[in-house]
Image 1 (cartoon, rainbow, N blue to C red):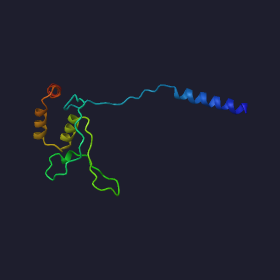
Image 2: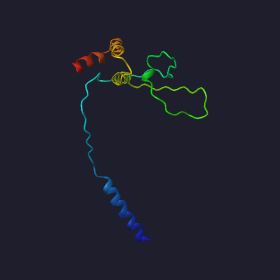
Image 3: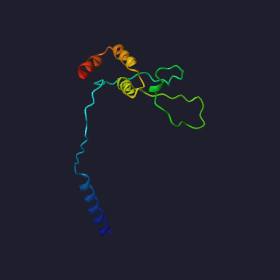
Image 4: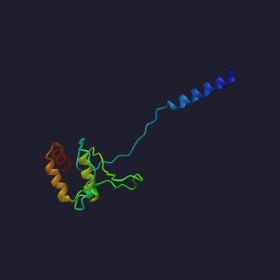
Length: 120
């Protein structure tokens, strides 16, 4: 019995000592110039608009699978950074340059002015 307790204590000590070492993880980062810096911006929660002529349809997240057996299911997302989302969709080609520039002008916020300084 004492041998088991001593063995268990030794194993625990070895385990704790091996886990207590501090490791440094380095990630290679590259600067990407774009529209920024981004601030948090939360919009209302609503399902995706199902209108055929919706200009934002390409920006919606694609749902590959849904709950089986449910009816009247609506999909949507909770937008936490609308500026980042629009910029990413602009880069992906889901928003035209003209619409993106219109959005930048319509936001008329400090971040839009900072972006112009940041880019150019």
